[in-house]
Amino acid sequence: MKILIENGEIVDGTGEKSYLSNILIENEVITDMGNFAIKKCELDRIIDAKGMIVAPGFIDTHSHSDLQVLLNPYIEQKIRQGITTEFLGQDGISLAPLPEQYISPWRKNLAGLDGDSDAIDWHYKDTSGYLALMEKQGLGLNEGYLVPHGNVRMEAMGLNNRQPTAAEMAKMCMVVRREMEAGAFGLSTGLIYMPCAYAETKELIELCRVVAEYDGVFVVHQRSEADTIISSMAEVLDIGRKAGVKIHFSHFKICGYKNRPFIEDMMKLLDKGKTEGISISFDQYPYVAGSTMLGVILPPWAHDGGTDRLMERLKDRSLRKKMIYDMEHGLPGWDNFIDFAGLEKIIVTSVKSKTNKDLIGKNLCEIGEIRGKDPYEAVFDLLYEEENAVGMVDFYGEEEDVISFLTRKEQNVCTDGILAGKPHPRVFGAFPRILRKYVREKKVLTLEKAIQKMTLKPAQAFGLRNRGSIKVGNFADIVIFNQKTVGDKGTFLNPEQYPVGIEYVLVNGNVVLHSGIYEKIPAGKVLRQSW
Image (cartoon, rainbow, N blue to C red; front, side):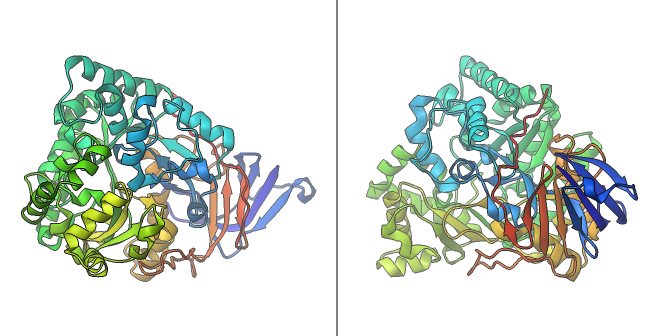
């Protein structure tokens, strides 16, 4: 297959000024650029990109398509916003490794973040088996994987809140090494999610020393993005310092208006870490609201032992009272969503049963009114009835702060897209939103810098080779868009709207989107890091 892209304005991903050029693609790879001579009869396809921007395919460094890629490998929400590569295994909670004895409790723990289904065979055991399952059924875009800390901990020592023995620590290191050898790009953790939150710093240092041997990246949802963010960041940087591992903060932000004064010190910590030689990057979605599983509003002790134990606690009226007390008064070191967002700014986005579908799109106060109960009690009932498989959106931030983080050199763009139910609009439009709002309208980024933050910057942060820039020899992951019209359409009330202005998307040299038509072909690859 030979494809010529002609007359386009190339923004190559390096951050350098755009230029006019033609691009020749043969099979999967860019083989020539410039004003070369070629017989048109030798070509299978010509794309006239006159008046349009030709850029590398966008790279989403924080995605939650882990289950969806096995149910529907053509993640149209990503392709239509120009994403050609995404990284799974985020927040320390994903599909692999998964020892058979933990399949049932882990599915319940995973459901609020990535969903659940009986339509797949859950007996793949480890990362190698999971990636092979992806390859067997084909992929619409490229998928990379991170070793999830929670899965590693579960395999070595179960789901209880305790510290590992020396033998269990050694087993965790062995599991990380096995999964890195299977092609993972690094280790992820989510230090507000169970069982990751039970780990002390020394555990993470030991695991990251293994990751550093492979020049992998430590991708971390830190312990706090609110009241104790400074000590939280200090912990992460200390891990980078002592383990010699590359640090990547997931969905970097500050939660809660009262915590905005911490931003200056956050920036100082980033600068200090860089002067010490720590490799630091972070991703960010361009919105003032986040999205995760509703169960995170409960105090950490409620989750000890996994979802089955949580269900037992939710049945206990005295423990419900203790949960309410902790949610209203807080606990040391715990990110309290009720405190920084509030009941009225947390909105349910997904449930698994038909019984509670009427609560999707309602905030926690409204849920109390609908059910004729105290909001806390109504939420406890909802989590119990849905076995913790409830998604939510929480409004926490300020637009000014989004821009402060967006313009940092360490930043790259992500969606953090949770696909179930009534999704966050970032699932459909995070990348085009950058091009519309922050390049064309607010002009806080040049087009070249914005594209760099969507392409080469994330590729470098995650050690991704031969992608992220347009140059001869690289894989032909390419997006072509109209700079004057490109933009997101989705809102929080009506998020499921595809963006506009994305005219063509190529994945590994295959044209998968053209003239608004998405061709569902298995153009993607499982990306394995070669060590």
